[in-house]
Image 1 (cartoon, rainbow, N blue to C red):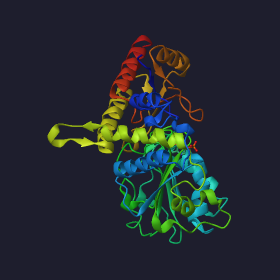
Image 2 (cartoon, rainbow, N blue to C red):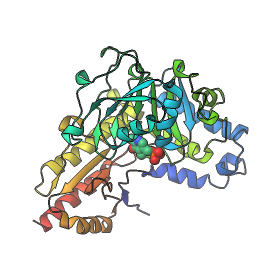
Image 3 (cartoon, protein in one colour):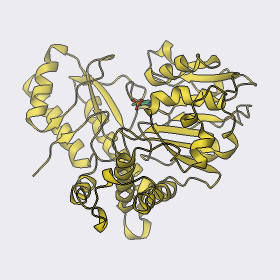
Length: 372
Ligand SMILES: *Cc1c(COP(=O)(O)O)cnc(C)c1O
């Protein structure tokens, strides 16, 4: 069966090989006589699945040993509360607000600490990023939060700021939900990074948190035990029952990522570096097609356009329905934009092959010709 190309922003398409392997292992995982869904999380079978997933993620993302990897629940939105509960000490935190998700984060943090907006791109109508040299950071902030890829607005940091160079020792907290594993991360600049799995790593239900050791152990007394990073870390993410099946599928996705290679034999890259090459090629192909058309446009500054989420609009919005119907008939699914901004959005995460983006570009051109 040939499956359609799925441009959903999340939960999003998974690599077909991952789905096939999960199907093949559904009734009997590796001769255990059980589905992964039916196993005790403390049994040796699931513990081996967990340990491989953690080790593979650490290797893929080149996460240093002084960071813990936590598999949590509650998604990115729960982390908006869990982070201030663990890091703020009831004092203060600075936020760089560049779109819908970082705005949600700062609003939630206000329940737990003193929040200051260090920079915002509201004035540019969320089409550019405020340069880090202009950020108004407070010396006493317990952390600085940003969202490195704004899924709805289609804005991505091409480089993380170096907070030390900006004069603060505060740790950088990064919401990388929608582009984790699409490009390497410079961990020397990061204190904590978090993301729900359902965009680029696996199914909904598991949230990855990568946190530097020195940030553990400062939770507020009101922090729920199951959300206290130190308790989660010292129990290998099994203080309470973890989302076992979601961790298993994420683990299969990590194995798939490890198999991905790009480039000639003498200059071959693998894993996240291979994905980055592919993601650059995919996003360029799509943005070029949009920029060269009379019918479609994207209004984000070229220096911060997202490689993962490409929002675009039809100049004639009365054709939106026809555009989406025609796309669906061609096997191009879930292109409707987020309800808060309208228009269209193509999310082209790691699992989207270049052929899928090419099929979308072909359709964009054909639809434009037909309606010129
Ligand atoms: C999807 C998303 C979230 C929210 O994740 P939930 O799992 O729904 O809580 C947070 N931040 C970003 C950048 C996202 O794309």
